[in-house]
Amino acid sequence: MITEDATEFAAALPATGGLLGLDLGTKTIGIASSDPDRRLASPVVTLKRGKFSVNSQEMQALINDRQTAGLVLGLPINMDGTSGPRAQSSRTFARNLTNALGLPVLLWDERLSTAAVERELIGLDTSRKRRAEVIDQMAASYILQGALDRLQAIKRQSS
Image (cartoon, rainbow, N blue to C red; front, side, top):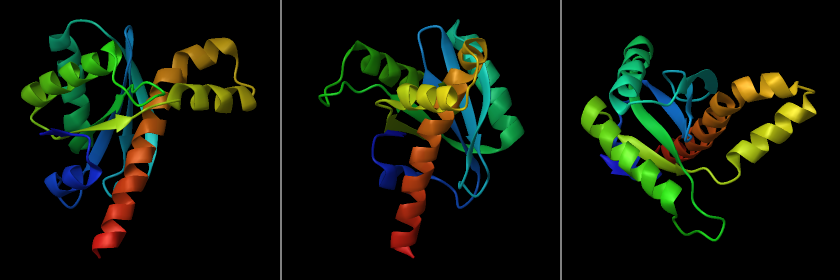
């Protein structure tokens, strides 16, 4: 299942189990993970983007290690709300992920996520070299935290 609707995604998830957040770039894939109660996102790793089969095996290992119930993939929507080639590429990647890994995928609007993380790292006086090393996994964490906050709001509304 692939959706852009957080309520639909929440309904497809078991009661507990972590989520992985993915920031898909042309050269890298930033990955973040949540706790099993889906409250807090933490950066995990940045994978070098290569063959899909290799990347999906790397993600499968993370999914197994972290008992992951679903995936949140950043969707690069244009500032005017339209979808461009990068958004289409993310949708294709999501389809391939669902087929390969069998987990539900939430496509999450990632507008300005990397810029927000970059500002935060600069504010923390992080060196340019260190920023380059962590920016993608931090952006994945930012994307995932936004989705987690929405899922918690949905949970509160249904209680």
